[in-house]
Image 1 (spheres, helix red, strand yellow):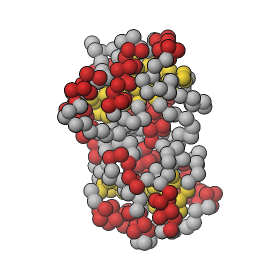
Image 2 (cartoon, rainbow, N blue to C red):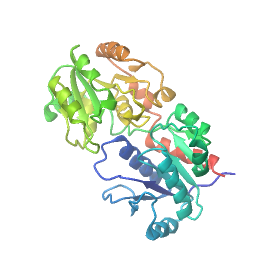
Image 3 (cartoon, rainbow, N blue to C red):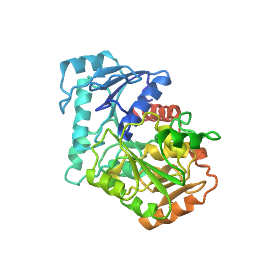
Length: 350
C-alpha cells in the first residue's frame, strides 16, 4: 500500500519574483495547486517574498547543509519531500536528493525534473545509489533515460490556468493592441528566453513571409544581446520588460510559434505553448519534449520536425479562420495536474 499524502514539503531553488519563466511558473503553480486540493504545503526556497503559499528559507550552499533548515523541514512533518531542482536531474541535483533524505530524517524524496538530462554509462552506477524514491518527468523519452540509469521514473503533464488564458472577447484584440502599442496586421507571437537555443533566428525568415512578429522575453534569465539585436534588426518587435498580464499579449496575437529543437532550450512542456492553446490560437511548434506525449496534430495545432516544416506550417496557420486548440488543454488545469501528481506519488511510494 502506498503513502497517503496530507503534507508535502516542496523544495525549489530561485523562485524569486517575477514568475516569468517556465521553471519558476511551473514550480509555484504546482505548489499552489497542491495546496488548493487541501494538502498542507510548505515551500522551502531562498528569499522569495510574495508567493501564494507559505515559505521557509532554503540554504544557498550546494549540499543544503543547515541545522535550521533540517529542523524546519522536520517540523513541517511532511509525508514526502518534493524537490524541483532548477537544473533538473543532474548529478548534483541527485546528490542534493540524498542530502534531503538525510536532513529530513529518512522522509521519502520525490524529484520533479523539468528538463531532459543524459548520463554516460560510467556515472550511472553512481547515480543509482543517489536516486530519489521516485522521479517525475515530462516526457516518455526522459522516463526511458532515467530508468536506463536505474532511476525509478513516471511521466506527468504540466498545466495551464484556462481562466486566465482564454480567447479574446469581441473587440478585445483591437483594444489590447492599442493598449500595448502593437500595430495591426497578422501578429505571430513567441514568449520566452532570448537565447540561441530557442532557434529564434529562424523567425526572421518567417517575418519576410508577411507576419508581424512579436517576441516577449523573460526578464528572469540572461539575454543573449547578439540574438536580441539580430531580431530587432530584422524588424521584429522585441519586448524585453516584464509584463504582468502576459495573458493579454496572447489575446492580441493571431498565432503562436515555438521553434525550439535544442533539449536545453526550455522545460520539456513549454508553458507558453499551453497558454497559447488555452487562448485558442493556432500554434506551430516543434515536437519538443513532452508535446508529442500530450497532443496529436490537428484543430489548429501544427507539430513540426524541421525548420522547413515550421516555415511551411506557419503559412498554413496564417490561413486558419478558427482554431480549436483550447479544447486540447481543457483537461490540463493545474488542479488536475496536482491530482495526477498526488495519485502518482501515492501509488509509487511504498
